[in-house]
Image 1: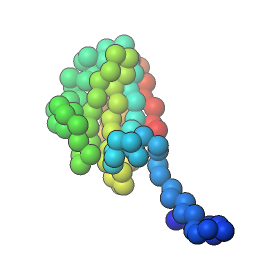
Image 2 (image 1 turned 180 degrees about the vertical axis):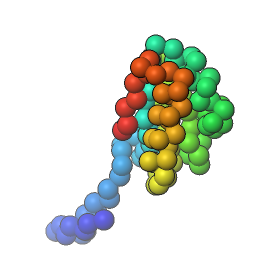
Image 3 (image 1 turned 90 degrees about the vertical axis):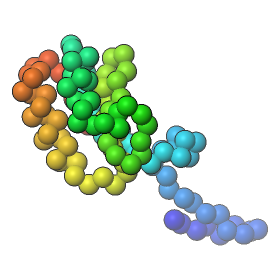
Length: 105
């Protein structure tokens, strides 16, 4: 936090990760987005690994399926990102080799 002095008082600058976090009070962020030719099968394979996907959770990894992609959200500060990357890619390569894309945010 940085404080700037003005003529009538102090102006505080508070850094936030995204403006939507201010509106929604969210404490998670998109870790990756998965695309592919068989999103339903990919989602069904990953869903048991991320049980919070059945509802919204800021406390644990959460999987969401949309029309054209699957998003994995992680709580802010969740450190084992390399673990998640390696695990997701190993699973997806085993069952969907060359039939998926993954973009890390």
